[in-house]
Image (cartoon, rainbow, N blue to C red; front, side, top):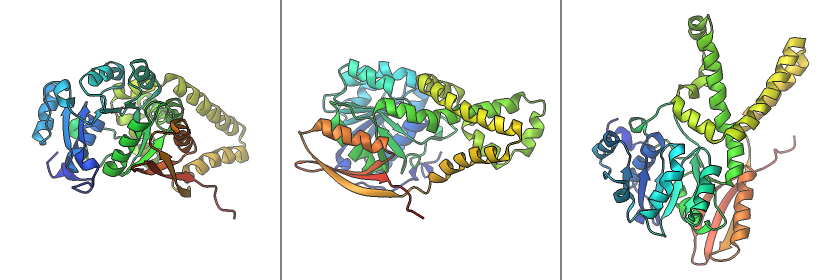
Length: 353
């Protein structure tokens, strides 16, 4: 990727308070690298670190400081993004915490949240660790595939905990300002249940469809006929298998629950097809069509909600989780002298015909 290519994705400067933030990214694969480049491009003081020396050298060629040790990369930073593989997060989190001061906000980008949230609480880091998951990706991997525009405008789940409201506020404000994201506040268990159906099962089903073709005696003929439906339905099967396996195993219970729901629908479709029941088959397919159409057609209502700086954190936490559970998101998190003002958007029922 040329230097010019790395500068896609948005404005070259940001307004305060993000302009004064010192950030670090630990793990510079696709997501971590995209984070790193975006933070660099908007003018933040950012350093990266990766366990692979060749990857660190690659980042330096892009003009990003990338020390040889993780401790040097994160020292003195205001926020650290942990972007390594899911299985490494419970071990890496306390290492990063020990190398940063108490005011440093820690977050991750892993696709499952309950396990790392539990680990952070057990390690006494719940007050400054905010589990996160940007809902964006690609069927490629590694720093060479990174794009500073990849995460811009995405939905970005953050899981505030009972003792982490102050850290959540700071992180949400930064992400909204720098990445223009829709912050979706959720509890970690609700995130994992929702992500199982929205993200993890599509990877499993894409792998199953592509795998069935690979085993078919007519494999080459099938691929010759493959058009948009097959290409769209199997796109994520092109990702690194180990990364997908980590994601599925990290959320095994919710994925299996979701898979049972999908099997139930598949069984209904198969029964209708076997019976030649056109009405039942059409009805089941129409259910899917309705959900698919709602992706781009849901109307949203907007409101603002203010909370005082040091009061009613339980009420604030409940409000935030309700927004996410209802399918809403935040587009604003403005700190004031007295507290915080959230701008939230909630899906509205469709207008009566």
